[in-house]
Image (cartoon, rainbow, N blue to C red; front, side, top):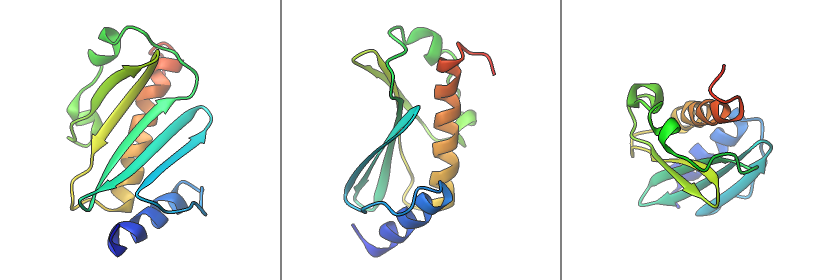
Length: 120
């Protein structure tokens, strides 16, 4: 992990009020009701968020609610692992901590719709 990615990760966790966190190439955190996995690859960040309690088995209703503009125009991958809805994004190399923070909040907002059955 290069120094810039490490500094951005540090700032990202500070923005989430979750500092300190051990910075590694692969970070997985569980903060109810969400889990988040961050992977640094080729100076880019892969961010994956999910609900800690399995909630969804059918992806159709959730995929139909996904719109690129809802995630700052960044493509998201929505998938199911063991009845757990997961959402993932490979962040652009130009993105920084505040971009990651906003994307994390948007992913959590999307997942919150699963918790509330689409009612916000």
